[in-house]
Length: 319
Ligand SMILES: Nc1nc2c(ncn2[C@@H]2O[C@H](COP(=O)(O)OP(=O)(O)O)[C@@H](O)[C@H]2O)c(=O)[nH]1
Ligand SMILES: [Mg+2]
Image (cartoon, rainbow, N blue to C red; front, side, top):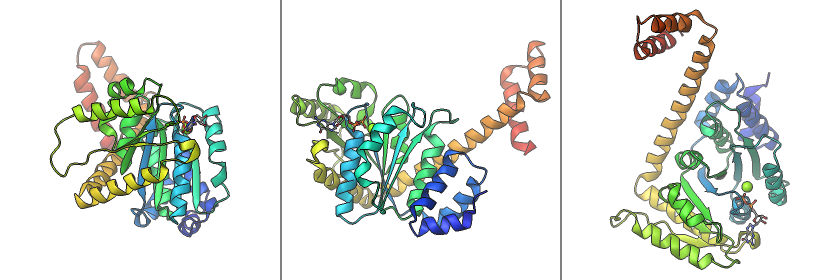
């Protein structure tokens, strides 16, 4: 068993090993998580959380690393969470990320963590926000969350970041894909990376066109900027930081930041509650209650909706 009060105190002082231990407790869904989160709650809320999403290979890790460099120049303490929804923990993609992050691994003011979510019930939805909380409590002023934009995950990242950055690159057919995936709606800042390659201008133009076709904007609404970068050489990265800071200022001015954080907290609670309920339903498989309900459905005495109601009532009252 971990000594939670000591770990929390050390994390609060910014000790990397304590931060790492606490995130391991998150990842392992430790029974001590409740104690950890209770202790961390009053220490959180100071971090600005930026999500980076985009297709594999677009340059998210390279951009993240370049953003770390830029924020370190500004003297900020930075957290990086690379969430991979598909690969196992020691997967190749994460190995590549580790290489790209190498220059920061000896910096005591940078916390880097890769997190695989495959095999977690509810996936990214509950684990990543708790890891973000740990980094937040450890005094990270900026937390960069990298994830692949597949399926639901870009929606999830939008829910858990203060600002969402969507990355595209020329020649990846990203324009059309982006529109299909609904990725245009979630981007607060768009980055066309690999601007050293042919087609970057065309991609930016196409994107600009598609953004312009969206719903009519009110004066004062946020118009997502498009920034061209060569992340591999750090070019354009200061402009990305500038766009992020502008978006953050705009959100604060319009009450959007507080609103997003409330929505994020609500989703966090929901994810934890749903996971807990699912676990209890799972427990019931070896239980006579579900079996008895199933028997009554087969016998025509009960319909499945009524049975589900009874099951849920049983779950929430049985404690
Ligand atoms: N030409 C070019 N290559 C880049 C640039 N940024 C990243 N890359 C390369 O693209 C590949 C994928 O980058 P990575 O950051 O791992 O992408 P991720 O899968 O989105 O995290 C790597 O080989 C990078 O070196 C860039 O600005 N220009
Ligand atoms: Mg990556």
